[in-house]
Length: 193
Image 1 (cartoon, helix red, strand yellow):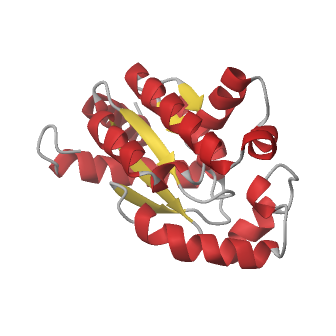
Image 2 (cartoon, helix red, strand yellow; image 1 turned 120 degrees about the horizontal axis):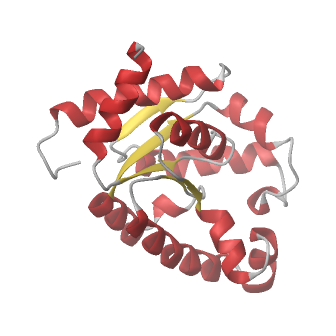
């Protein structure tokens, strides 16, 4: 067994039945890194936005357009609370999910939160590739991202683990996540993280 495999197996054993919950702004890599992390840890992967779309039979953009952000966030809270009962897994959340105190408390009870922190240039490069970002459909995307960073980064900083999401191979970021989790979970008293 390689050192990387041993580290992944150790983190998986330390998780127990808890979920790893990926948090951060759109474009930070919650889904792409989350899928690879789940494969590395040999646990299922879930994407909260995909589950919301399945439950509503609409895309996230359509839910925002038809019902508004408040209704979307209410559905998001319910879906994440339900998904957290299916651990262990890696769960990617939408960028605004961790902003909700009730959702943060549910994640703290049943999971370990991982903030994929990225700088503005990295985020803009990634989010401008897709047209499916409802919060970026109006105005200046850079100004919107700056505002979201100012509001959300202090809350994301409450996550159990922070890993820099940067322009590097996905496997390098996955290795960083596993190492940070190993460090955090190995020293945390049972039940505290």
